[in-house]
Image 1: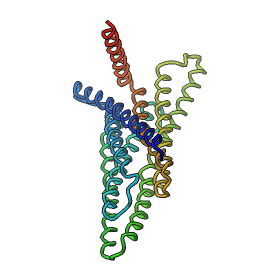
Image 2: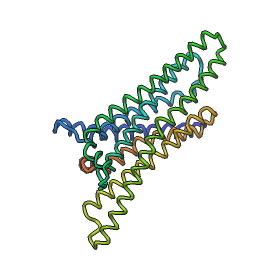
Image 3: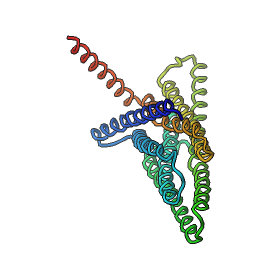
Image 4: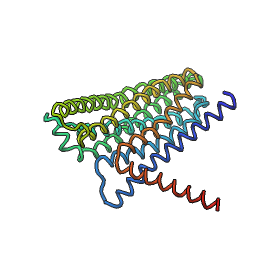
Amino acid sequence: MTSTKIIAFLAAVADFVLGGLLSNGFITAVIITEWAKSRSLAACEQLLLSLGISNISNTFLIYLGLYNLNTTNTISNSLMLLLYQSFCFAVVFIRFWLTAWLCVFYCVKILNSTHSFFLWWKMRISRLVPRLIVGSCIVSFFASFFVVLSVSKQLQSNKTANVTNITQAGKMEDLLKNVNIFFLIIGSTCPLLIVFVCSVLVVVSLCRHACKMTSKGSNLRNLQTEAHVKAAWTVFSLLVLYISFYVVQTLGPILKFQKNLFSFVMCFIVLLMYSPVQAAILVLSNPKLKQTALRMIHLTYEVLYWIKHASLS
């Protein structure tokens, strides 16, 4: 790439990294402050806090991945590279599952179904959220451990076979491709299906509620309809964001192995966009976070206005 493209790329990376850290740091700080005041957290706030922390961690990991773009897969760094990628996979899929559970939470809270399955979830969702969060973390890191174990065995077999460095690098590349495919199917597709089902259920529930209120001649913009609209907007926005990230995650490793650097860099930028965009969706969908953000913006505007007038005088 030319120097202009490199500068533009680094500027975009810096902007999205800073935006992801600030936005998710804001969510984390607000919820932790609320936790310190009330000594307890609601189920939704637990999910938001977990998503904020996972987004911050993932932003750091993706930024560190920038240094691996031009790394050659030699014997000395193959294991370290795969260890890094397996940890990245764990953090990414934790975020996937947390997004899925947040959509499930919105779906269960907003639906008014009399089916026993939904009633069971509605009565227990608040108690299940901490277990779902911990379970997602354990399963993701447990799967990553088996990936690292399989790679270490592959390296040991290569050493005992006394093959050349080129052959070892080729085997490591093939193994890395298989790991990407495995995690893509197991770790990404299942949460995506959950988010998609929740989106469909929330939209269908909203349409039924709107038709019912219209047939009764009531005001459509009542509190329950507002809650339906907000939940539908949040879940659908998370679904669109998830699909875009899913597509990029699928294409990224393929483009990297095909040495298509420009396309891979574009995918890298989209990956960095996920954290700040998701943070914006979460802030807009949560009244506490939205009010706090508006107060901070108003306070910042007043401080800047005071500084401007102080400098002029």
